[in-house]
Image (tube, rainbow, N blue to C red; front, top):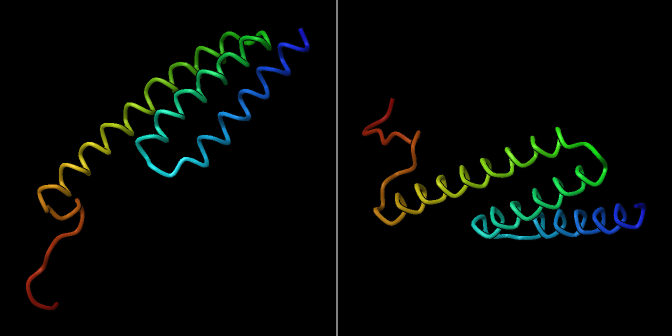
Length: 93
């Protein structure tokens, strides 16, 4: 069992490093999903199924929110709209 734990720990560490080293936010969200899967697997191997379920829930919701945010930002950039919160003011004040 210790060998399985070691293999899963190494996979989790490698996927964490891949998540951090990925520069593109879209690819990072996808790699983060892989990291969440390996983290959940690690908690299952360590006999913590309740924590594994929590990681699966967050791992499913977080990348989806990132993808939706990226879609909105890229749509606004394509239209040439100013970012939210940057009100354009005429004159000084």
